[in-house]
View 1 (cartoon, one colour):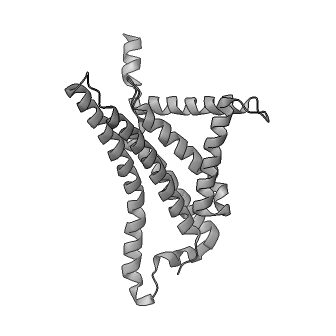
View 2 (cartoon, rainbow, N blue to C red; view 1 turned 90 degrees about the vertical axis):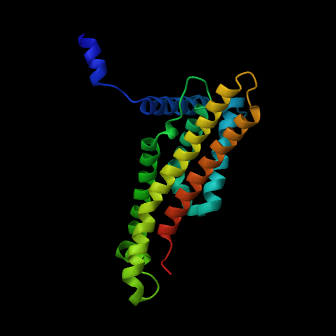
Amino acid sequence: MHSLSFLENHYIPAHIMYTWFVMVLLALCSFLATRKLDIYPTRFQNVMEVVVSGLDSLITDTMGHDGRKFFPLIATIGLFILTSNLLGLVPGFESPTANLNTNLSMALVVFCMTHVMGVKVHGYKYVKQFMGPVWWLTPLMVLIELVSHLVRPVSLTVRLFGNIEGGHIVVAVLFLLAPFLVPIPILFLKIFISVIQTLVFMLLSMMYIAGAMEEAH
């Protein structure tokens, strides 16, 4: 009875367990890819190098060379989201990104990093980005800019959640309606959506951070 009571009082939500599973999986892949680095890489090391170099090129092309200091953040978010999205396609598993809490935690990290970098680069002048081009529009522009910035984490959260959870529901319904005629094109579409939503989250995150570091016009 005591052990049952302990489990009931210490219930771990499914999305947290799957989040930790994805984290351990990515850490294991990182360890396996780097434990024996060689000039002539193994297949696994070669695959990981292609993935990392692709992410580096994406970040550099979007944010410039100064964006490389954000590589750990953006690449980690990208790999986590993609792995989480694809995990939901495996029978018996769930996508952590099909939960609003998981997505909101990443969106808030990006939100905080955006304004931390804005203040770090511009100091108190960062406020000018919220004031608009002319002084008499300042009250209206401040209100608009505040709403715009506060909506960003909500947008990142809901967009990712809606696409991933919606895709799971569609696939589940099709499995129930046609269990022997599994719509393979739908599964490929789900994979495509998983990749696209990962890129969208990454690109918007990079644009927000880069925009905070730009000079106000």
